[in-house]
Amino acid sequence: MLDTFYRVLGTGCIPRWHAGVIDMDGAYFAAPGQELFVAEAPGGEIRAPSASAGPAVRAV
Image (cartoon, rainbow, N blue to C red; front, top):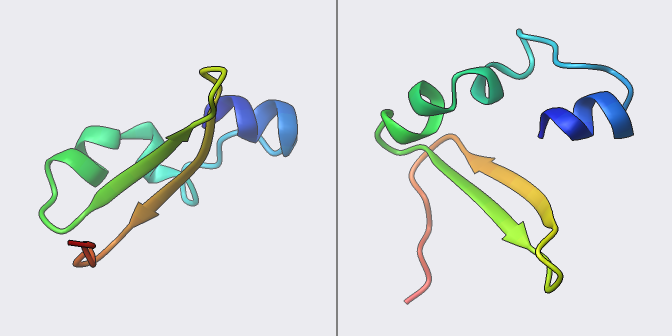
């Protein structure tokens, strides 16, 4: 994600906008109801990070 901020968007990491990237453990893994999804392309490239800040809807 940091690569995208710096190389693609040219904005760098802005702490007030990207706190979840700076502290992924606290933002997603240690906080109930938070989820982080990442898509991997067939060649192994990581694409489309997305986060959920509330209860997730799960497909069954």
